Length: 386
Image: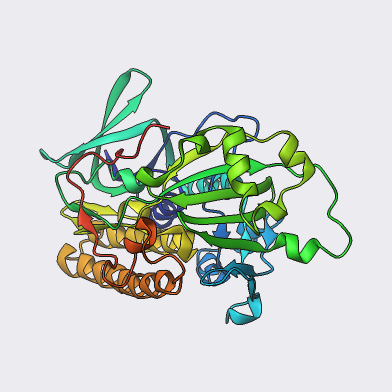
């Protein structure tokens, strides 16, 4: 029987397992990594510089952000105006952040958890049963289901929140989705353009917004919108490329090579989501399973790292005999504070775009439609099957 099982091996899950293992607990890390594939990438590539403080506390810095990860040189934003406005790292009190190869970054964190003693458990967590003694975690691998006994479970399965169904209410902010593609660099950058090209570019459009950024594996281009507003042509390589080229600033970052060989776009859920409560007897949620943020915030990985570390510590304290009520109350206070700050800045950010107040995407995010986080009454996979 494990002291704890962590379901999900993204940043939140890997860090939670790391903290539990270093606390001397027998912990398993359930992981179902995707098969390596040419052009594979993962969005959510921005890591703010403030993450260095936590990574240092976890003894993971500077290795976690070493090459080939790229230092961010700032951002250009076309929001509320067709012109680009510069936001450089000098405006961040901690300096420049990073543009990550997310697959490599996540693998580094998993390896650190395993090195600390967390046992890898291949498969995908599908349910958590509390029928005593302890908990039964059901893990699917292939066509079979394995039962794993544990005293505590950490749900780090992302927005799907596989273990907390029936235990908490998932309140979704909106229905935001991202369609994205990895463009590979086919040419040298023109002389003097390296700084401009390395910056993230964000551009608002009538039906949502776009962003593009360089990562160690290529240029990621993404369009954020609501499912009912998404142009069906975005599902095809040519349709996605044509839509990107119709923008004023995003298309200008695409090379001739990108235009000649556009990749197949992928779709991901991008809606904000908040779990209530974040934990209970024998379980706790971390990362996007507890609190997912709109990608416009660029705070998703940082929040996942912090919540993973605090969830791992909370479980370790409870396993050591601390009353779970005060421990979970402290964890709740932390995440509630993050959620309140996020809601405030989210409202201000979307209110700053005033060019299309009558259009659905912007109406839904106006001052009268703030991030109220409506309860999710159906299964998490509600986005259209693209």
